Image (cartoon, rainbow, N blue to C red; front, side, top):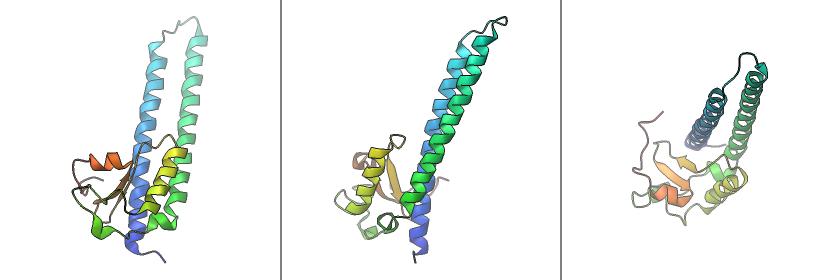
Amino acid sequence: MPSANTTKIALMFTVAVAVAIIAALSVSLYSVQSQAQEQPSDPENNVSFRDNEVRLVAAAADIEKRINESIRVMRLTSELAQVRSTDYLDSISIEHMGISEDKDIEKRTVARQVLSQHAEFSGIFFLTPDEDIYLGEHFEQQEQLPRLNYADRD
């Protein structure tokens, strides 16, 4: 049975990735809406207006599909034993803004697989129950973080 801390880590991972995906997809929808509004529509020619509406509906459906797929990936990933373990909590350091690149290779491997198979994810971060960074993948993103603890964020 997983511990409360392990479950909390998996949940924080899922929430963090969901927030990043929703933000990226919102930008995409905003871009599509802006393009649709920039195209002039002739009141006597409703075809252009209807084309824009169709594009917006299709874009919204695509974004919804991508969000649902991302949620599915996060749920499946959060159930993996490699993701639920935190064997290197005592190795967290400010030097690496989490654990070093050579620690918890199994968790890093899972993160790399998700990143390689799902372009909508640009990075994956695991946090501790105290909201310290445990690890980030790509490691270069982890190293460049401005701080170790993110407890002040929702």
